[in-house]
Length: 116
Length: 114
Image (cartoon, rainbow over the protein chains, first blue to last red):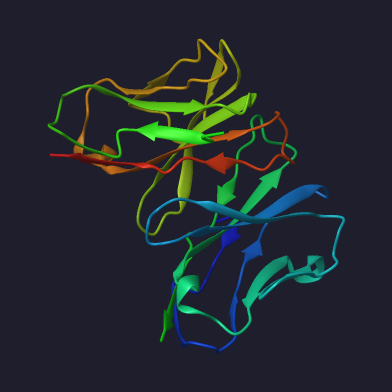
């Protein structure tokens, strides 16, 4: 079973629209970490945020915000007033304490296209 | 700091050839790892290292070898390339060993095996 599910394969929005990228995870652990990474067309992976399982406060960073809900095992990412530079593939990842290494379980990614 | 660097950026191999993908970091990070990225499958862990001289297998280790003789370098070797190894390879590192650590990724190596 997939530990991290990003059901939205591709999303297109018009510039200045808000968009939410969904991430649902599966774990039996009470302690774990969740991450979001951005992969722009240039190909590198850029770290966006880390959240531990005990901190359910929503986080806002500029136009980006994250909504973490343990009750639904979701860690959704919202971009407000989207811009063309937001066009990228976004990955959600899970890290569990049971890992023998620092292994991330990645979702399959959501490709976001912002149309000018 | 240069961060995590990878060479080459692109490589084309013929089936059966061998090669080494280079990865280096200048942040004195303890943990290093290799992932491969395939369409529709996200990133999957190949091998990882928790320190110089210590390596272990990840989710998809077959066909790859690694070694870690220094803290800075973590090369990935393909002993006999196969078309199934066509992929984008990412090296990552984190300051310490632990599930709470953020991993920082290199720019990737795009490999095509014919």
